[in-house]
Image 1 (cartoon, rainbow, N blue to C red):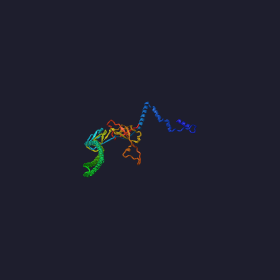
Image 2: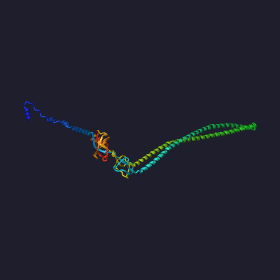
Image 3: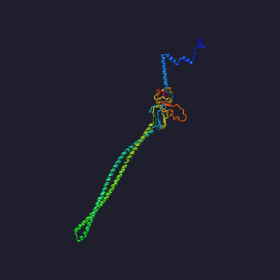
Image 4: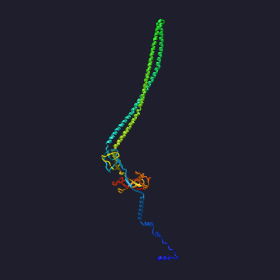
Length: 444
């Protein structure tokens, strides 16, 4: 109070002292009188013990690591367990005579599960086998027929060609014989007849002149007999020459007949040769028959193989290992091709289909570590990203959206991600397709 009164006296109006300074602002008082947060924190840290400082550093590092990991992962609850479920149907019709499975039992690959009555299909196999044997026998016969036809036609053609050559030679010989007979022998015989006729006429004329002379005695009987003998010889020579001419003419007729016969034989041989050459066309015909028989063999073999397949289809085996579900077949039931009998769920090959938002997919890559929380068991399973779908789920729907028509509202799309999960060795925690899970992918 005294100091305040003194100050008031020193600062009274009218005095020659300095003016009173303005009152400081609250902010100025706070800055001057209250230490900063950083300074306080720093002072508090400096006052800590060495062990506390080390613990604080470790805590800070843990917080930073947690924050780094937290921002390096993406999660979604739009995920479920999935698997490639195999539907088994019958491929042939018949009555079920054996059934070795029941609902929800585990089977191994190649286990015999269903047996359809095979007797009808065994009979079809036997019938197809008989048809195949018959077709093979016909093909073998057709193959042998090719060689027989080729050899027969080749021999016949060679024989016909040789016969034609022989008959042609005979025809040429007959033609030459006819020419020789008609030109040489006949002409010679005609000339001989003409010569003998002239000699005979002269001898007969001499005889006629000597007849009156022998009666008058102008010539002797001896001379007349000589002229008479000469006339008879000349007449005989003429007759012989005429006979030779007739024989030569007959030879011409015989030669002409022989020529015609040779010509006919040559013509017949020519026809036979043409016929045998025509028979050579049977070779490609038999070859075509053999090919047709081979086709019959292939057809019969295909029918036999189909019958074998149908017989094999009567025994239905497990195509994969898994658990039987949706069992719809019963013992004694008549099944038709395409009837669904049961489905197999491969529980050892399940995977996770997680539908992440497209805004979460920036850093997701195949091979990244994942964690799957299964709602059924309330526990986590380890996994790894296998692949990312090529299109959003909406594009794979039965009726995909058509954003080019009507009013457009932007909706965040979901991208399916396939995650391979490691099954637990504990049979109590079996993952079954359709279970809801929460998937988390660590992108760092």
